[in-house]
Length: 152
Image 1: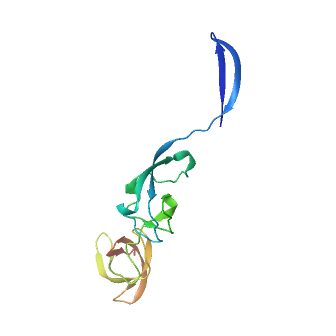
Image 2 (image 1 turned 90 degrees about the vertical axis):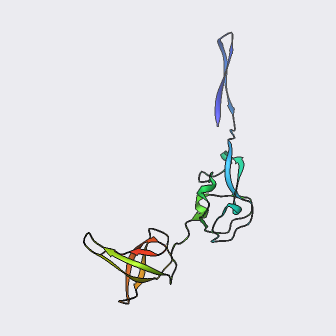
């Protein structure tokens, strides 16, 4: 961008001129020092902090290692790449074929039964689950790796 420069002699205005400036801001960002395949679950060995010019990086660049550890790569990540939020997602906590406890409850009643997951999902997602007892397919929200809550 451009900024004005004002020249004064003995506190008297003499001249004003505009100059073009380039501002560099450096800070730590998370990079992957090695090539990572798609669907890699990120560990401490897969990333490190490195000082880079933030002015030349996208706004969604990640600056904290803890924001990366345990997440999964959505695509191949080349060695020495700066990690951005759009490169990662959460790994599924349940996978197709997993057996889980289905829970349906109200204030007065709680019913549990065995269910089979029909699609991989992350915590909080609504998925299809087969009620093993009734052989009916129903929808429920993933609570954790072993539990799906069914609304009724």
